[in-house]
Each structure stands twice: as structure tokens, then as C-alpha cells.
Image (cartoon, one colour):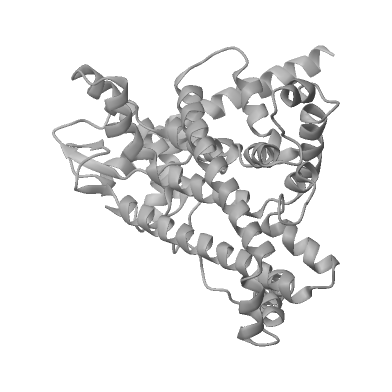
Length: 402
């Protein structure tokens, strides 16, 4: 037993010495790489024009330097997962400053932010040109299988919607678009989006800023609550709201006494839509705000700016692309919601029927042309959302490269 303990202790000492040697080597290699990358006497900053580490096209040498800086900064592989380091900031040089270890740590975090976020910063934009060509039989086979799978699951059904909608000509398609019940469903869908999207955008903005700027008991629990709409089935959401605001629910009798109807009315549909679209903006902004440099806000306050001026002139310009992206996702989710709205609305034709409910109702009544006409409109809204999303990502990428 004593011999075994001595062996274990010797192994521990060896591992400690090996770790110290590895850390020393990494620090020396990192400083050498930083000296080779930046001019002599150059420091690092985030707001000048001369690039020290080009973020538009990171070379392999720069990537190795980045990993080295990350290891010196204590940033492991676990912190480089999606959603933990996001934002996007260019690393630039400023003459007359020294490359201290603290600066190197900030460089590592910012460069990992750029590398992991892609071209569109915190929005999970399209990747850069860091991949390699597909060569060999098995890689090509895997790519072909992926394309075939996407075509079978997404492209072919999507194209079939348009084929079925225009099967009897454009005139028949236009007649269904002018149907009063169809127009009422379109109007109700737009009204639900008009109500739920601004409320959740404002809530998400305020919640994200307060969560990232403050530490308080129950913060982790609050973040878990924000993810609740992602994990609960929309049908269960509609059932919960019906049990709360129904005739025999907790709040139903009091609301009915005041002449307010929630279930089978627009109010309940708005509540259900707001619930399912709650997390998008706040979850899009939290990673950006967590990686944002607070020195700009502190400088603005030191110059006499109040909280509103700091938000409008400093915070909002840094998060505007993430805010816009979250707004797009919220609007898309609001217009396409089915389960929660179906339960709490009652799916009453011409009264509480949205576009998604109209598709189901028309298809069940064997009015397939009207169902496909409504599906075409919803698909067109989805294509418009994707187009705006790509434009936002391109604009964010162009700003990141500046």
C-alpha cells in the first residue's frame, strides 16, 4: 500500500511539473506569435482602422495564434461552443501601447468571438471560406445524401405547395385569395403579429440588458424560465391558458364579470402568441451583451450621459443587428403559430381563425385549393423572412469587416 501511494504521489508531481512546463511554453509561444503578427510597439484596441489581426479572412497562422491567446486567457474548448462567445469585433492596432497579458486576454476573447460567430456576428451567420473542397468518394457520398435528404424533406414538399395551388390556373388561385373568410384569417394573423411582436421585442430588450448587467439571486432560474416556451408543447400552452382564463378557471369568472372574454377571443390568441414568441429576442441579445465591451458605456457616463443617452448612442448600435434578427424570428413564429392558438381560439370560421387554422380547416373540408392558396401565402411570408434574414446577416458581416 505504501509503495502504491508513493507511486501515485510521484505521478501527481510529474503531472504538475508537466502542466507548469506546458503553460510556460504556451505563454512564450503566444507572446512570440503576437510579436510576429503585430508591429513592434503596437498594442491592441477595438476601434481603430489599421487591422492587426484581419478578421475578414483569418489565415491558418492567425488561427494558431488565436488558439494560443485563448489558451493563455484561460478560454477552453467548452467556452467556445455556440451561444457562449458571440458578438463580432475587429481586433485592430494602436501605436504607442504595450501588448500586456491583460490585452492578450481580451484579444483572445474577441477573436474567438469573431471566429465562432461567423460573418453575421451573434446571429449565427454563414460560415466563412475556412472549409476545404470535398474530395474522395465517401465525402461526396455524404454530401449527396445530405442534399437528397433536404430535398426530400424540405424542397419537394415546398415546391408541391405551389404546384397544387396553381394547378387550376392563376384565376382560380386569385378567387380563393378574395374569399371573405380567407381575408379575415389574413387580417387576424397580421393583428396578432402586430400586437405580440412589439411587446416581446421591448420585453426581450429590457430583460436582456438587466440580466447581463446585474447579478441577483435566482438569475439561473429566470434564464430557465425564459426557455420554457421552447420546451413546452404549444398545445399544452393553449390548454394551460384555457384552464386559467376559461369559464371555470382561476381568472375566468372575474374577467367574465367585467365583460372581458379571453378564451375563444382575440385576447386569448394574443396571449398564446406572446407566450410562444417570448424567448427569441432575449435569447438573441444575451450573448451579444455578455461579450460587449463595457468601457464605452462607462466612458459615456463619465462624460455626463444619462442612462437613456447611453442606451441610444452606445448600447443600441452594438446590438442592433441581433435585435433586428430576433425581431424577424419573433414575427415568423407569430405568423406561423398553430397549436396554442388552435386550442384557445376554438378555430371559429370568420371569427378566431388565423391563416394556419384556415389551412387545416379548408383541407379537412376537402377544399384543397383554398388550403393550398393559404399555404402559398404562408410560404411566401417564410421566403420573405429568409430574404430579410440574409440581408441582415450580410449587413452585419460587412460591418464586421470594416
